[in-house]
Image (cartoon, rainbow, N blue to C red):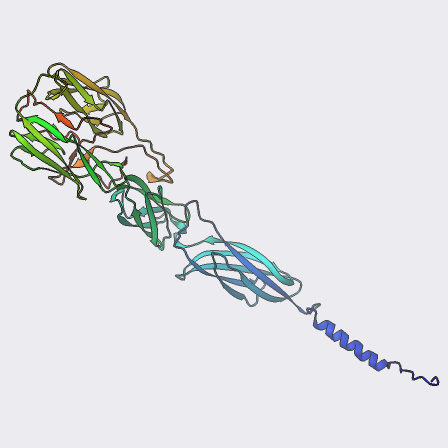
Length: 496
């Protein structure tokens, strides 16, 4: 001791030993136990990936609810189970495991389950767990739904016709290679032209088609997850908004026969073909309507109206004046001068006109013939054309006094692009067609169809006079030489 100052005592050996023991205990508390005989711990984050569907496959009706995982040690022992919900087809499973030693091998089994409780995707793989936290594991789940073995798809409807703005229900059935039906069947629906028709899934293998008011041929395609597909062609028939009878006045002699042309159009202004029209004469004692659509037969002198009406109520009226004599013909004119038919069976109407020396219209008696391309097109006694083969020809109208005129007619194939073909059935990813349709329409007086003339680009006048036939005066109008109706067969039908 020093005089006047207090000297602190040095820590005792026992006190120093106690402080050191506390520090060691605190340090060990913060460390993961390890070493011989102590268990190791690992955390695994499993992110499943789903097998992508084949091009165009994968039903929009598939709705996954959760993924379930089982982690089982390969050397035996208890398994670990985890589940996670899907959010936009994404989910993450979390596993925490302990094991002896520095690593352990596990079998990881994953199953993706939809909202109906069915397992649609599965996977199994081996992983190695090592001590540590949040090890990320990715695995791809394979599609294992019952329809994964589908070998063929059969649609409930064949090629069909639907009116604009109408809807149509359709369903699909699937079979495997042994022709056993598979259920459930998950279908992705699509159309070749979504601007003309759309289809919405109403169930795993059912849908409803909604057509716009257009005149088109649209392909409806059903495709399974593995890419197997079937399709139908659907003709959309736009609703008739306007009927225009050409010409608006027709002059005949008693006993004469003639045919009106008609232009039918939609609300968009598109020319429509193959539409049923009901033809009626206001005074059947003067003019009789019968035979092919638009054909009239003069019975007695006078003037009366002929009305053409569509099922939608659109109508137009033309007048028929029955006369007793005609002026001498000095010139004959045929219109239109050129006609373009697309596809065998397509049709159009030619109109012949005769003029007197004062340039006024006068009745004429015509004989129609085909030159420079016999067999390409046929023409009847009233100027109605039907395409028979690909090529071109001249169609001549000769008036009985010797004057004549002609029109050039060309027949081409419609342009069709096929996206895919399977087992002879049409399966298409797209279609384009230049076909403008036929000039056929239903006879308003019966359920059968008959050929009605469609004037294509005709610049003929609104007044037309046709003379009686010298060889067939008083004869009935002949029916059209071609009759066609829309069918549900699997034959190709073009629209426009």
